[in-house]
Image (cartoon, rainbow, N blue to C red; front, top):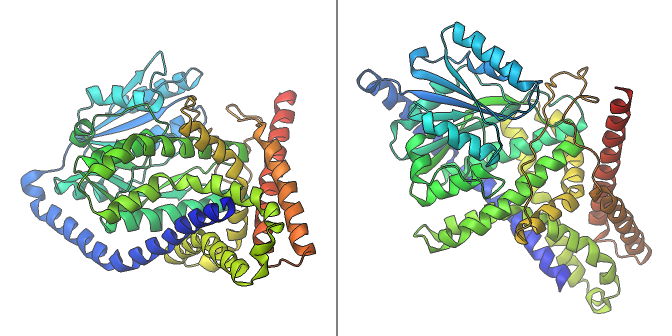
Length: 493
């Protein structure tokens, strides 16, 4: 029963990927027409209303390798300078402080309205820094960029027109990738990010479903932030939390896939795992905080169902572990194998659950890139990473459910762009975690299950155990490789 329960949960989340792809197709043309109408209306009324004042917030913490790049890129935005304010919200405790101050002074000398705000504490982490910045922000619109991003020059000119609709509280743009070609790991992550933005975010925004601000490369209406209760630090995903509180207040969140802001993809598997841990734990914390209010609201049942699947998506990882752990005991459930119908049902459910996300990722490559066929060759590795990360993310989900507190561990950025760039030996590296021992043990357990299923001629479930085996071993050995390499580099330094 545990096996079937976990399987049905995975099936539900997998099927939702197909739903989102269908929703994308149904709403794509309508969204294009609406976007064209918004720009036409804004340009028609521009002379009367003028461009709004915008504040750009740059929350940073110990970003010595990328902070100058970030500030410089924001100062290159194509927007009336007298309507643009830039806030560098720096909580750093290392030489990032000096680099940021010098860069801010240089840009101020060039005529930019740019301020450097340094807190002597990290209360509230990123949410606390953004909240502090909002208190003195001059703009009616507030754009946010994390340290690993580069702002597209046309970012504001392309996005501000959408706020002519007074109901729009936030606009999210699509993430691009500065270093997707760096390694197999960055290629796989890039495909996953593309799937989220080009399909999930687009489908939710265009279909009238609840979506979320992704923490960066987006713009908020200051009034929407204040109306929703401001930035709050009681979850690790302050962006997701504010998004749901704003939508429950009636604000509209929208998405523009045509505007792309490129970012540095994590190059270390241990940094990726840390990032995933924060997102998984924060999502479940946000679900606990907001689902009760959501279910009591007067939004449609479809919106409620989709919001539930959205906020609890990381529950797929505990379900994956349950499927793996109960697979060997299933061999001794003889009644289950007495009739072909039961294994065939399991095979079908596993197929739909497994290939739902994969189909969505493939679909995203097809709609984004002309060379999509060449790109999807990395999809199997993404499947391995997606399953192998289950131990790491299950830990995060359990911590959220059990109210176990932890700090905000930001993802390290190294200024990596080209294949010849190096990250090993630099500051901020995240070391090998003891969680990798469980990944190794589960790899052997999955392998044992695979061998037993083949030995007893139970072939229908075997391919999925092969995926789990490859996933756990891939994540373990990559974690070990990056962790040991980092240790060696630090010793040499």
